[in-house]
Amino acid sequence: MLVLAGCPKKTSDKPVEPAPGDAGRLLPMSDAPAPIVLAPAPPLPPVPPGLPAPAGAEDPELVRLGELVFWDPRLSQTGKLACASCHEPDHGFAGGRIDTAAGKPNLRAAPALVNLAWKKSFGWDGRFDQLRVFLAGHAIGQLGSDLGDAKVRLDALPIYHAYFARVPQALDSSLAAYVITRYAGDSPWDRVERSRDVPPDLKAGYQLFGGKAQCSVCHPPPLYSDLAFHRLGLIATPDEGRGKVDPAQKGAFATPTLRGAALRTSFFHDASAQTLEDAIDWHLAGGTGQGADKSIVDPALKKVTLTPAERAQLIAFVRALTAPDAVPAKPVLP
Image (cartoon, rainbow, N blue to C red; front, side, top):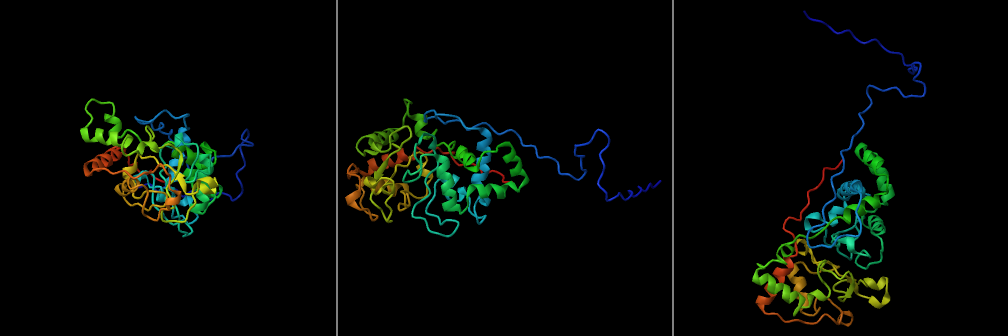
């Protein structure tokens, strides 16, 4: 037997009056969207072997939100450029000289955003003493958007709205929490450094790094950066670098970590060296070429002559400071 369901009666357009005892309470709507329930944030990434312990721990919820925002091009004014567009995660969170969201050319390359937990100043010239302030200013200059305005735009999306309800801090805090937990460690060198079975060429490269080639003067372990500023000349761009903060350090730039360097696609503050080998050779030559102004090159940068075998050993060692599985996966964006 066929049974036809009756049509529902038309209801009045008048507001529904609450039943006794329901006064002051909103009645459920049958067509209201189900509330978004966020799963707990994953644990913080562990500090990999080879690195010292950081000073403090970050909030996992802030890190998770920061990861989404870091990858999301809707953070920019144009909706096309994300933090990850320039600080490419598959290239060690570094990049070349990419135009800003407004189409303005950059004089400087995107620095590697790894192992920042141990830094006290940020940016190539170190003018920022707080990572949050650096990122907020960076968003305006590179993405063309104030982070407060970006949060308003993202908050219109239900999932982001749920995240912001759980993590009410400003976007600069979430971005900083994510960036400061990007670690570069657990490299092939870390895995064999204290072993009895260090490959002979790798051991020779380490000895050259700390001895004849003098690399460790500015790139000491375990961070493989002295976190200081050194004058390399202006290279190929008219950029005073640290001179904008301290006139006595004209032409000085922050020493980048060599951890993760093998993943990068360009080197120096202006991306004027295209390969790791080119960057090493430039240093071995004493800082000549590529438009470097010898009058402001750090006098500690001396020419070093290596045999072809020694050069190969040194390069192999520097490459061994990059973990082979350091490429993170892109998150699913709201």
